[in-house]
Each structure stands twice: as structure tokens, then as C-alpha cells.
Length: 169
Image 1 (spheres, helix red, strand yellow):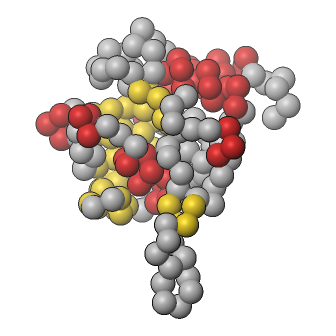
Image 2: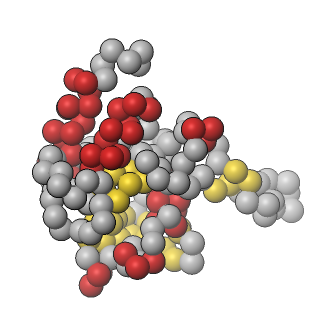
């Protein structure tokens, strides 16, 4: 698991960015994404995993995109499963750019998000359900980021469910 502390694991409210509007309203930004990436892309069915805090793509996507190393490319478009993200907006504002969101009905992407970085490549990430247990999410993050991993997103989620079903969820 990268860049996340236990004290922020389930924080869905984010933190104030200090730019309250004149009317007293505040804007918020999500904490850093809970993300694990393989050292390189294209070695298996997945390039890593992402554990969003909630299912609102418009809140989660800017944090995900902002946490990526610039050497991995600039995300111009994301592809998400239409069933998993039925209310996904067609565009999301991220730091200094607008990201196009494409809905897909392809079964292979049912539990994944694809980050399209144009000529640099595409990153396919397992999407760990926001309410997943810490133990299962840690296993999924580590396994998906392992360059030797040959499991699909659906298979990994099924194994995590079977292995962590007695953890109090």
C-alpha cells in the first residue's frame, strides 16, 4: 500500500483546500489515492490496484491522477465499467486539466479502471471496492502491483472474498 496512513483509511470527506468561497462554502480535495503500481506496464493483466474511499468518481479521480508519477504519462482519458460506475460524469476536473471519462460494457473491465496516457501507454488498475476490509485491500494492492501477477481483477477479488470472508465485515 503506498502513500496512505491508517488514520486516513476511511476518510471520505477529504480536507479543506483553504479556498473557501465568499459565501462561506468550502471546497475539498480527497486525501492522496490509495494506490499500488507495478514497476512497469504490460507484464500481466493488471498494472496495479486502486482503493477509492467512495464510489463518486468525480471526487476520487483527481486524487488518483494527482498521485501518479509524471514519468508514467499524463492521463487524458479514463475508461470505467458502466455497471460499476453508472453515474460517472463524462468529464472530471483534475489539477490543471479536464479528463474525459468513457463508459465501457466490456466484461474484462468490470472491476478495473483504465488510465489512458496517450502515446506513453495505458494503465489498467484493479478497483478495490471502497468498503473492502483493510486486510483484503492490502493483499489486493500488493498482489496487483506484483509484476509476476497473472490474475485478472475478477479472480483477485474472488480470492480476496474467499480468503477474508471471516474478518468481521
